[in-house]
Amino acid sequence: MPAVLQSVLELAKSENPMHRESALTIFGTLVSLMGQELKQYFDTIYQVIVAGLNDSNVKVTYYFLLIV
Image 1 (cartoon, rainbow, N blue to C red):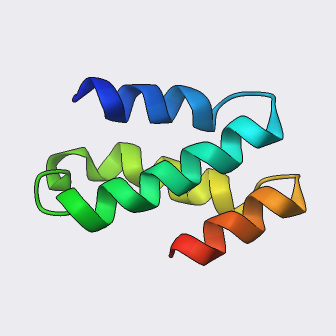
Image 2: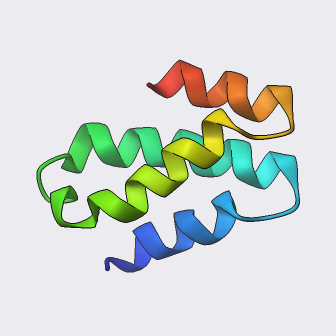
């Protein structure tokens, strides 16, 4: 797994909502720039998508919806 993707996943799991917001913004950029290259990591990416949609912080979910 690319180091940058691993870092984004760690941010996405943070207890800090601002970290999760940032992770989703970075994640959206990565997917738009490297979509095909990330195909092999679909299961992991799917987990981030589900976590973003189900986040307890409304702002995190809002930022997630902006990138989708």
